[in-house]
Amino acid sequence: MNKFFRSFLLCLFLMGIFTVSAYAAADTLKVGLRYGSGGMFSANLQNVTGSGWGYEVGYYDGNRNFVTLGSIDTNEISMTADGAVYIAADGTYSPSGSGAAIGGYHIQLSESFSSWEEVSYAAGQFEGAFPAYINGTYRLRIGHFMTRADAAARAALYVGTTWRDSAGGQHAFSADAAGPTGTAVTITVTGTQTILFEFDCSGAISLGVMPVGASPTVTWFKGYRYYGGFEYPRTTGGNLSVINVLPLEDYVKGVVPYEMSPSWSLEALKAQAVCARTYALRATWHRGDGFDVCNGTDCQVYYGVGSATALSDRAAEETAGLCLYYNGQLIEAVYSASNGGASESAKNVWGSDVGYLQGKIDPYESAISIPSYQYSVAFTARELSQILASKGRSVGTVRDVYVSSTTDVGNVAAVTFVGSTGTVTVTGETCRTIWNGVISGKSVRSQRYTISGGSGGGGGYPVNGDGAVISEVGGNYVISGGGTISAYSGGETYVMTGSGLQQLQPSGGGAGTGGSAGVFTITGAGSGHNVGMSQYGAKAMAELGYGYEEILHFYYTDVTIERAV
Image (cartoon, rainbow, N blue to C red; front, side, top):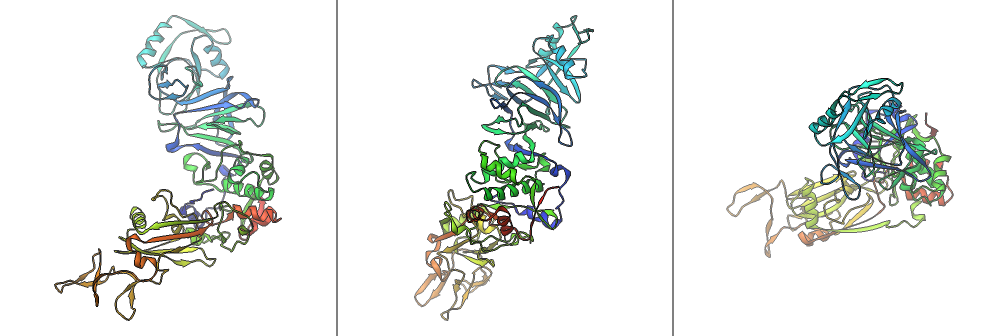
């Protein structure tokens, strides 16, 4: 589940987007395995031994039904972007190289065919021929060539020959050269130059591949095993997206053992299964990419069925169809690894008040041992200055940092950074993420922490001997040595004291004396955004004898558990 959950998703709550469309409510789910910058020039499939043999090729219609165009009787196939394809020594395909290659140009018969059987019958009469499905029509293609001229020259050699249809009719050979397009996909026997099928519907529909065999069929892709079929959109002339298309309940079986250890108590796994199912049906933000949910932490982790156990499968099966609802609508069933002792309200993390995502003290996590539960990380003032500058929040040289506000349950609500040129306060989820991703190996894992080494919020800059302070020097005026009064413009600030000229420093805490060499230590507990269900909390509750319904009702306020419609 997204440990860095994006705040814009919560805006959907305020926009009233709660209704699940037929696209998501269907029994079939689309999961993006590779897409965008992660798209693939070539993607392999292999039936798992004993699971099946061969594939049906076709496409998924608007209702996600698989429409079969034909069948391929081989166990290892590759789907590759149409064009010149070079074969490396290890059998992998790439768009450049030397040695063996598959050319992107073919001889294409002028005739079209009414069925896979008809085009396959004709293909059997030409060496190197294969079926193609081009913009809704079966076509016959022969060979592969690196240039159009090569394809045309070879086609000329067939002039004067004939071929037969399945009814015995004779046809004079007539053909043109067909070249690659930005939406075509070629299927080959993996690691060879043997073309089995080509598909090009100009991006209007995408190639689909369905493994054939025992139900449910299991197929290898990139080292993981998956249920269901696959879809390969290619609409921009670039690489292929890879989408796993499968029944919702099979998807849930592929999430549970990756989001929780499949060895955990059954009731915890059941709670996770209900959350996973709810989250998937509620998902909308990847629709523009052509699927429902991705397979990483931006959505929820899904790598097929390789890690599934009898226990994790049982959790999915015994909660089949059950989802979480609030006021009759599916909820955003967010969760994180652990909350450090208190979950948090969505309003205090992402800015939107969500009725069922309310913070509360969590007494359960402390009942079990949680790996790396407590954490401590130290930042120098120089590192904090670098972090703030890289994120567009520079305050010059950091002099002080402290928790300036906490929530009702004690999580961090605001952090203030005081520097040589100003002060900045961050709120919500930024209190966790502001520290991360700049200084290698250092991060703050939750919103439940304290800061030592700073003033604790009680510091400031002393302006007289009576203890009066100002919170920052920016915005004040200074008198120069020549007597000129002007607005303070930043930089080091010095004051005249009874002991002579001294650099102005904030009072209180380590920052007051540490300056740019100061060290600020973050000490906290938990891991994640703190909103919704704690996965380790669910584990603890299950081990204490609570059922999955009780777990879910504790972490999500005023929800109901109902069968999805």
